[in-house]
Amino acid sequence: MKKIKILAIETSCDETGAAILEGKSGSKNPRFKILANVVSSQIKIHALWGGVVPSLAKREHQANLIPVLKKTLKESNLLIFNSEFLIFKQIQSSKFKILNSILEREPELLKQFLKFIPAIAVPKIDAIAVTSGPGLEPALWTGVNFAKALALIWKKPLIAVNHMEGHIVSVLLKQNKIIKFPAIALLVSGGHTELVLIKNWLNYRIIGQTLDDAAGEAFDKVARLLGLPYPGGPALAKLAVKNKKVPDFKPRTPSAVRFPRPMINSRDFDFSFSGLKTAVLYLVRKLPELTPEIKAQICREFQQAVIDVLIAKTLKAVQKYKPKTVILGGGVAANQELRKQIKKELSKKFSKISLLLPEIKFTGDNAAMIAAAGCLKAFKKMFVKNIKTLKADGNLKLG
Ligand code: KG4
Ligand code: ZN
Image (tube, rainbow, N blue to C red; front, side, top):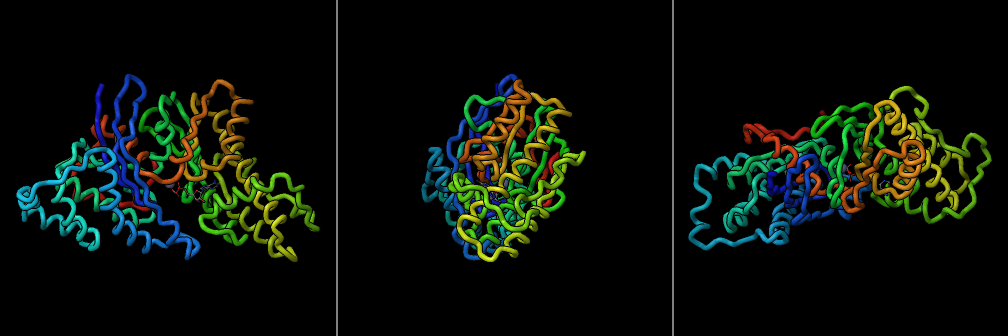
């Protein structure tokens, strides 16, 4: 059995994350122990603009990475300050030059890096994992450059992790969870809606995906047109739940009573949510007044339309590929109705299949899931060959 300690960095969107995790490779399933998991959210900043602003996200990651790293090292008891003599010795001039070139587009981060990193002892970790995509490219680059600089100065191997792979393994952060293969993952986040067939560890095939908006994106857009605050998904879900007892709203136009379930009967495993968003828009435009009751009913019906399609397509994929495990991952996996209904429908039709849901705290973006995915890669020695050439890729695909 192998045992390794990984430091992970996550900056793909609007959360600056760092985590340290210990992974043990078992005979079949790995085991993880989280030593620290720190997330610094930028929600308040982006809320002012009604959505994530990439340049602001990058600026915030630059400012937050060192404080987040410091907290992570401290929480995992790996923060040791150096003596003055060692500080002087640590960054040699040759390395300083490379460091400057790696962090040249992150001046604020470089400033903080040069102050903090030489002041601490090299932490006892075995490797550094970083999200290299998909996500907002400027934001991703800050994390990638930071991880490169740390790997270089601390002489640690670097692991590039796909953010969606992190969402898949987020279900393993709960103690004693195991994945039996083949597995199917329904990944629902702000940028992605995917059905992934997983034949074995690190073996992914996307069997279906959204043709336009992602599920989380649809939640956010509909929330916005209903005047709900950012981030829209949780706000919309809250309104839908709170008003469950309100009788169904009956607008005058019969076609507006229900929203469509786009592509629910299509033969493939793909999704489309932009038409659903447009249906909500047309209804809102037609209404003489958007009362709180009507708003709540729209939230409920919209949420149910998304859930119906997600579950129908997942069950269809289960029917075809006969997996032993179904995994739900991504920010939208925090939706309580989705969790409840997928559990119910799956156990009704396929009682032998186990459903793995991530803990709510691991549904949103975090570095613990990136560290877990990094561990899987480290066990297979899948390190970045040449640190300097690693690139952030906003459109990185699984598989
Ligand atoms: O995975 P994530 O944190 O970031 C990306 O990788 O995109 O997902 C964020 C998405 C947002 O669209 C957010 O509105 C949505 O997840 N979300 C929810 C809920 N909580 C977060 N959508 C529906 N219901 C929720 N409870
Ligand atoms: Zn995500």
